Amino acid sequence: MSLIDTERDNIRKTWAKRRELAIAQEKTMKEEAMERAGKIAKFLKDKYAIKKVYLYGSLSREGPFDKYSDIDLFIDGWNEALNYWTMYIEVEKIAMPFAVSVITDKEITSELKEKILKEGKII
View 1 (cartoon, rainbow, N blue to C red):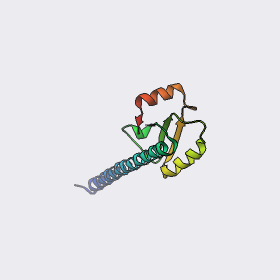
View 2: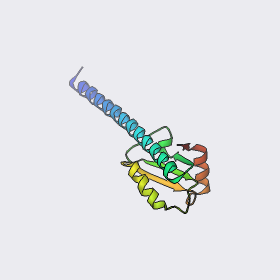
View 3: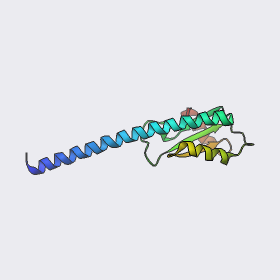
View 4: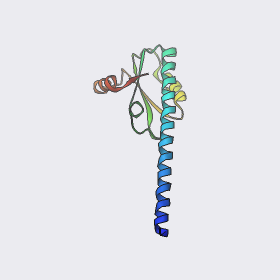
């Protein structure tokens, strides 16, 4: 085996190790985000009497979840008499270090709601 072949093999091994590490980190990140989503759902049910919280987006599907991904939640049955922004700030604190998106019946389109109800996960 020549020096060039040895160097090429070393580079390939390094790339493979980096890829394995990236996959492991992504899995850990996704697990942590799922844990945060569950805590948020419990908080919303306990404090705001929300009946159903749907998880949708990249966290709800198989596939990549990286540092640019967020926790996407749909609250079915939000009480408009409550302060959305107070709730959102509390949810953001629970979600840290992840970004979070929380939508309610008021701002959702019928198309997105249909998709979430069909493909999302109740948490």
